[in-house]
Image 1: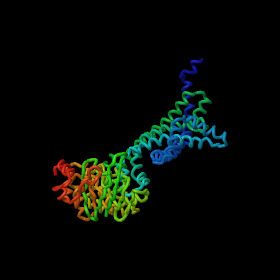
Image 2: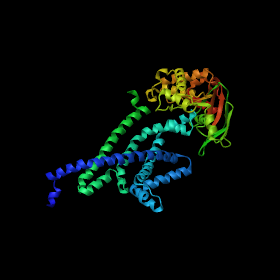
Image 3: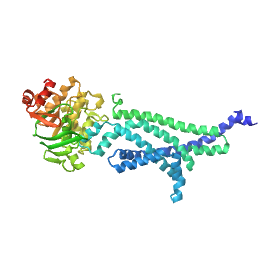
Image 4: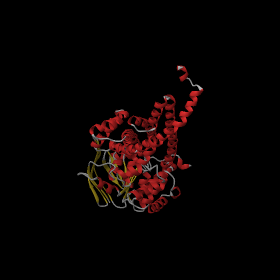
Length: 238
Length: 245
């Protein structure tokens, strides 16, 4: 009897098919309504945080450097799950209550911002000093040189590592399940708690993440080719 | 046109320029020579404040920067616009086309419209003989072509003075001529130029004055024929003999 429930009997396979057809909808809905928007919004905000943090870290202002350093150190030195819990379950105890989705946005933005700032900092530092000098020599100031000359080149350098960050973020959004965001993994938990087919349902959730990340890696390749053309490394000849 | 008084520059404890005084008159071409590490490039880089001097007064076209007191970033920016700089390693912007390299400063710094900037860029690229390459990216050009784009890029900003920091040192020998030709044309048009170079033939043919720098001081200066043929100082003699001019 016990063995029978574990084995893949024809009845069980039939049951899988039923579960698959009824649960794929909610899983994809969770991905479209929460997982993907969460990743995109948090990454966009995180990138802005990252650019400013990177600039602060390479600035000549000691205070700015110190603030950026502490921020990056705290975020990188603490678990993302703990950060989310502090925002969603911790802050209400001092009177700051934030809904699940905005809590997740705040947590993931701050998190990805810290990691991406290191990528952007390295990318900016990888641009030869001569580029800054050439920009200054035609009369540009710091911000003009940065925006027009250095960042466009740094963007090309940082696309592969930033893509990794983004793909990592997509997967990390599953942690939002713990702060009640109804994203893909939370849907899977809910479905599995009703039908007890944990293995099957979680594999389905995993597939949803994998498909998203697979598509992202294709987009990454396209962006790299396009930026190569803009930066003029190879595409210009074709 | 250019006046340098008591210019001092140190990197850490190393004094690279020790109290340099120099005047360059309008329309003159001054070639600066000297052994490596003598401070000749630093002198040029101080003139457009890519290096901040530790002391001294710079003046170009009546605009003064006094480094014996503190100098604002804004003043440095305005001062920099008086000079155009050509670097040994070209330093073209790799993400922009030839035209883009020339127009970038015009649109971003001078506020010209894209159309006006492109028009001006075309004139300048024609002048340096690169009209046919205006849509290429730097990596598609030879070193000599890249350096000519760099000259056009600097000229676009209408500088009062052109500074050349070993403009042909990174070039293959057969490409040196095309760059020197553009520089000669500029000199004949009356551009005030300060050129750090090892091209003694260029110095002989084009320079109004040659300055020999060693160990952070101007050792000797004079007309090229005189300085090359009858150097007065021992250090100059020694340096020139090593160059076999």
